[in-house]
Image (tube, rainbow, N blue to C red):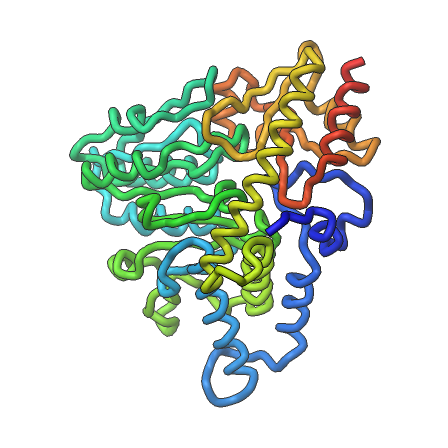
Length: 402
């Protein structure tokens, strides 16, 4: 099936404003079917979930369809799909719950490559429990986080390892499956921040070996919230703080308060939208198969754009590209000789090109790269970007450097 980016772009109302968006790692634009699903959910009767009245049945259906869609997207069990306000909130909730079982001298491993949302909650939980924190370092010259650098830190006291599926700053995709094998061999749990990864790769949480996997639908065309995936049997062993009358079932025991049904409807629509970007149905047997085909098409499109952008940026001079890992998302972090990335961001903005500057909450990674808290200019490609966007970016940076 041919990847038709022009047809795809026409389904995003926000793109009519004319901005060339390279801010996908911070959140994508929203396609019309997702917007429509949000409105449709609110247009029909809605009430607390149940099985007697139309509003109850509608709410129950929206929850069930949301869990099924996210399970298809991640290769997970629908009964292990947890809604959250954000991935950060979910990580804090799980860290506090797990830390109840930690003792002084237990160990937690975090990665210097990660977003702070997969570092700080574990550091704070470890501090409260008296646990020791060990740091896995990535190579600033290559951007690589080898599995061995994590494995070397594991001991019989390791309780949890937190690692990113893909760096939101430089795009590095560590070999999570290899890390998982080492972690499980040590008898520990693996918590994977899949927020950046899920927008660009066909995820299989079982293949990755993730005990916990979080992502954020607004990174892949959906609404602003977080999703946690874990095996239901693992979730049943955890005792989160909750209200006495609220359900103790899994996954409901982790979801505080009434769910925002309209957001669940929009998330299901986002997954269906992605599934429609791949196989036309001639060979696919279900949504999971169509998602596999869609991500293959997305990867080919984004990789071609990234390679073109890298070639053009390399010809500009005075630009350092910090995204160098062998396996990475279409995300480039740039810095400039004697020029601030924030100045480049503002210069590009005047011509309708949105490439933001900063460290994007990946403080440890930015500091490890020698960029301090200020970071660099991040160029993040999304499925709706095209060659015209890239040409506008390159021309804008060329003008800026002159």
